[in-house]
Image 1 (cartoon, helix red, strand yellow):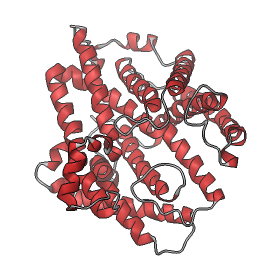
Image 2 (spheres, helix red, strand yellow; image 1 turned 180 degrees about the vertical axis):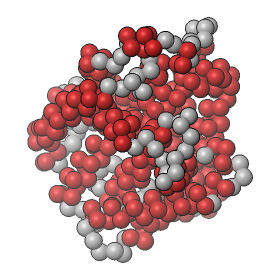
Image 3 (cartoon, rainbow, N blue to C red; image 1 turned 90 degrees about the vertical axis):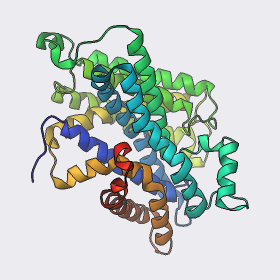
Length: 388
């Protein structure tokens, strides 16, 4: 298998497209799971045991996979700002993140909701419903999966404003001496401090923000994780930690975080009320269940991120033709996958199989169809290639 140029961190590209595939799997599970929110659901084949399996899978993914993408985005925000400065950086992020978000909010999302999932109710036709949702501001809460791009745009602008306020240019990573990098290597106190900070910050925010309150289609209780992981990405770049990541130490840190997370998760299920159908305390509030859940999410977030970066850097730091295609089309798949996945779920609705099997089939078929559509058609449309 042929490789690509070594001026790219290929293992990071591979992490990104794998996370996008996990996004497809999350939304496939949302289709059949009693937990979560999605445009189209088919829960007729889901029993309590299957619901428990889905809930564990969804909770685990939610604890790390989008946060890891924010950390990667923060990592690349630093050299981008170093090269471009405030104005060009902000303009570039507006095009790369704002334009696809508007495309989804104004076109992809409305088409999905009106013609595919039929979640827009009321008469007057598509144009009438489109104008109603636009004028009453409801479209701002209908960002779908593009909440990620909207929040990332917000983080990027905040980062650019912070950099601009410093009135000085930080030397690019390659201009620093190796002794400076070595003296600030990633270590155990840093990992522990970050994980604990993530835990406490998340718990405090969730204690005061109602569970049903959302901003940009995101619960504010998740913002601390995303913001801190984005910030961590900027620090990792500036200190040169990614290339000098202590693999053996990182694997030990991930083990010390992930292994205790298993019994903690079991305890949260048993004593938090989930086994008896009571999930009221998991969403937040100042209670022991929310406190434990915030701790568990922080352990999984930091532990899984350390583990994945270490494994991908060691074993998956190359790309052949298939991986390159998946990498190039990952963002386009992220933007356009909802209507395709829903249509495939409707097709599978006549297939008599357990919900877990349906979710696996839906994930695989959605990945095959969406990546093929992106590579063969969507990214070939004039104007879309620049923003996708």
